[in-house]
Image 1: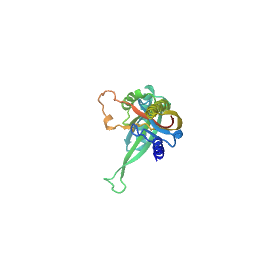
Image 2: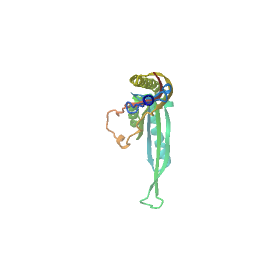
Image 3: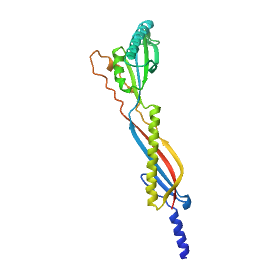
Image 4: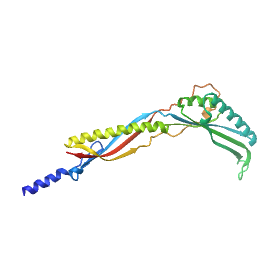
Amino acid sequence: MAIAITFTFCLCLLIYSINFNNHDLHAQSTPLDNTTLFVTGSAKTQTKPDKVTVSLGVETTNTKAKAALAANSELMNKIINALKIAGVNENETSTSSFTITPNRDYSIDKNQGKLIGFTVSNSIQIDSHNVNDSSEWIDIAVSSGANNVNSIYFSVSDKKLDGIKNELLREAIENAREKADIAASALGLKIAGIRTVNIDQDTPFFPGPIPYSAESLKSDAITPSTPIMAGEQQISLSVTIVFLLEE
């Protein structure tokens, strides 16, 4: 009877589990030469965006479509030339939208509306790595005739993001190994190898495009430079590693 009790007690010692740091670490055994330790390591950092996208444009209205288009083209060319002088490269600008919309007065004709004119809208988009110049570009565009600043959006380029993720991966693996060493030591075991590694790359969060009211730009008064702040973005990465343990 004593022998049977001792054998059962030994088997119980070989089957165990632990939880550490919000389920970041879990160990199991079946048998000792196949003992595994599941560990989650993580790393995060803050980084400044290195890309900016600015959408701005001109809206003109006239009773004649041709006149509205001519006025719009004149203002847009003036804006583009001013931005070039300010340092915006030609390959950094592109047309994002262009529309000619008829204006109808339904108070006169409730069914079809009386045609009273046309509105021409033309918007361009600036994609650049010169993040710090975005405030100046908006001021120049508005002073040159832009009456629509649709949005501004900051982001991190793929090249910079890849470099950050590579560094975070090393840090996350080191974090997982440190947890594994602590847990193994507490169990009277040591790390013998690695069975599997899973990388969980969190998508960095970036605020959406920041809209600007066209009405706030229609002022003849001399105002200070438009305050544009890129801020910082958080990027995180985690890994789950299954370690092999031995005595």
